[in-house]
Image (cartoon, rainbow, N blue to C red; front, side):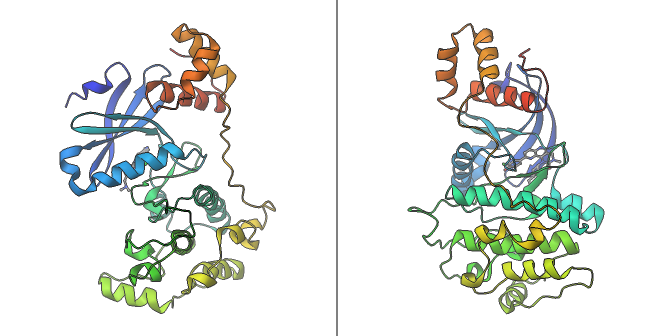
Length: 331
Ligand SMILES: CN(C)C[C@H]1CC[C@H](N2C(=O)N(C)Cc3cnc4ccc(-c5cc(Cl)c(O)c(Cl)c5)nc4c32)CC1
């Protein structure tokens, strides 16, 4: 494959994973030397999944948060989509849990606070993810979680109070109202999935599981699940508050951020605000202006068009370097 559209912009390396209709390759951004992950999709093989790609791109262009995988650039050609994404070297949280069998409460708590922050942020922006599971949470080099795969997310027209209908996501993580085909609120369905996620983090297996899908659905709709002896009272209480069959009785994201189990030993509510500021960073603008031989004003105006072209990628990757204490320099 030539991938000629990337020439000079990125140095392509090996394939690091594949997700259904996409191939993900490691690459180096040539101007900063920073590593990125490039998700490559062939339009022909996308078929009816094409709308999912457009959904994911539109959502990720609007989301900018420390626990959401950053989209840097989008390249669309006649037969391909390329999404240049934040590199997460430690892979999926799913593999991390499998490797450790299950997590100690304090480690699960740190991860779960990050998940609550990411979901609180997207709900606040009017999005429901609808496919929350450990496979869609990646670990970066500092063991921080990054939420990925917004192909099934929904931004209900008129806000999060408006209902959704499409039954989607992974069965074992799907809320009872979602699998019963009734209308549902995206935010409430996400909370249920987070309950399954927290259970999986603390137990190392799923609360509702069965190879036979109809059997699995019966178990979910019964709302009955076992809790192993090692779970603390507070964690059991939190899981049960999220795995309420009646979505109206389910804990909300606003109640989650100050839940005792999440606050215990950390004593601070979960902060879901993005660490990224709307104002562009002066050091990055200066370095870009010097490189492109433009005035700072011109450079700032170009960057703030947020075209998700090579300039957007270069700006964000320079900012990454700065946040990691590396020199704000282009090669
Ligand atoms: C089965 N899955 C749902 C897909 C799997 C694909 C490889 C990926 N990966 C890996 O499996 N490593 C082992 C390395 C790796 C490193 N950085 C990554 C950065 C971003 C992504 C990514 C992948 C997809 Cl399909 C997305 O939609 C988004 Cl928004 C982001 N995947 C990465 C990734 C993990 C997830």
